[in-house]
Image 1 (cartoon, rainbow, N blue to C red):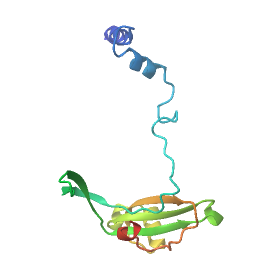
Image 2: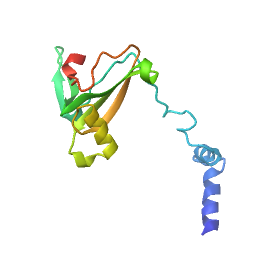
Image 3: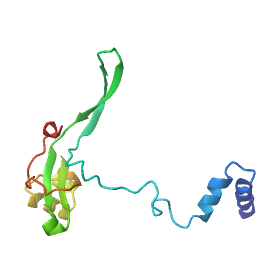
Image 4: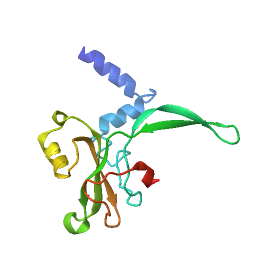
Length: 151
């Protein structure tokens, strides 16, 4: 069997094969693409501000004045969008606001996550995300973020 696999690998990596370049790259790569600073690198946009969470409810269509049909995603906002932590440059070295979303039962979270939410005076929230800011945050811990006020 090993001879058969070796022969197959040689056939795929031969110079005439269409798989030659990708297969050689996979064999020669010592680290995955995400470690080499490839497409998986994420950078925070500091000018974006604080955001709100929502869940995809479905799709619909909207007609413009010209009669064009434009597909539109419908976003449903559940319980949540609560500020669970405020980080400032003086205490943490950078400015950020942590927002929680999607209230769930207490047994769905670990004890540290549950304690973090209770400290903020928020219900048990499944998703916690941090939004970095340039200026000092104006939000208070426990404040609800309304998506209508952001736009």
